[in-house]
Length: 517
Image 1 (cartoon, rainbow, N blue to C red):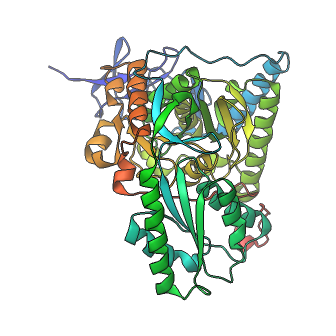
Image 2: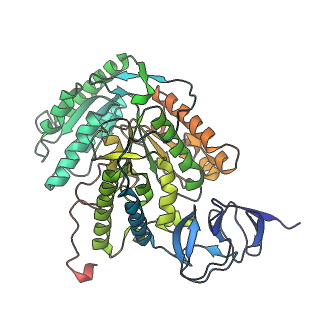
Image 3: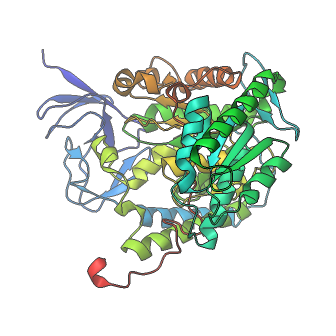
């Protein structure tokens, strides 16, 4: 009997379906209610045409245009980069125009939660109460090197104590915008809700004065010490003294007692990295469902963004205009650098191998991870949200995995819910990373990196609602001290995002030498 291969039709209006398993040329594919012969081999996660699509006509997935046919596409054809034009920038411009016409005619109104809160196992968690009223779910002792030359000493102290080191590649000869961002990155780590105390290590002649970092941390009520390699006896003495100080602070941290705290005081963020075909269909909707639950219980969500389809989630006209401003700056910067937009370098080769053809397709799947709540407003990198609800961080620039996660942690996120289809191992120094995937193969191959597998949603064994509640309950367990996979592995990254420039350290300028373009 001839075998029929499985596909998924996401929305009935779509003119493509997603292959759930590899389809050989000539094999039959079950596409909705009909069987379609595959004209070419179609890898799992890639798209098959449900109908003829003439050249220049839209490719529709998620009931949304993701690109245009670059040639005539026949029913049953493999639909991917070879026959699809990525027109993300044009699609975004059109979406902005339509949204603006709608928003300009509406009055500002109170932003209400997207959903009601489900029945949960608890409405409080056992957490650490800070002197300023914040809560912490960890009691980290950090060792911060404020100059590249002090990295080794900080690392040795951390190795001897099990403390978390924060090192970096610069610290001298920095232009003002980058210098301010570095200082902000160190201070926000030292004052993060999950940080108990800090040791700062310097060289002595660096551009950053230690007091610029030490004083704000001390003012936050945390214990903080500073050791200088040039004035405190050199490398070995600083490592010995630093080890002693850190162990003393760790002993005090262990004496701290957790107390009942409302779950609404948790600050959450989400990030999608290493997307594949399963991300937008399983892991990302489950992550978005978790954020919707958190908003419903009165919690706070912060997230980097400012471009793409998030415009439909602007809570009022002012938020929309700010998002347009952020997006316009980003696109202008991209155009100066390479003559086109972000679609020149995104999706990544790994994304495309996994079945994502255009940036618009990737964006649509990615935005599933951010939930459905309306955005209350924008905050800057390192700024705390002024209240509960969802807040966008002006961080479309450099919002890759490491920058994006650190940027959200700099705004006080207690946890990062990180979805990945291909498998990304990134953790964070201050905010524990809860890692989930919707790809069963990725989970099986890299199980030690993951806290949750959303593949049952893809197989129809669980609903998004069921999985979202299950993941939220796991998050509450992590909040009370259970270690995440990234913590067990010891991945504590802290990559401070760039400052004024959208794609690099310095304001974008046109190339001056044609030979170097």
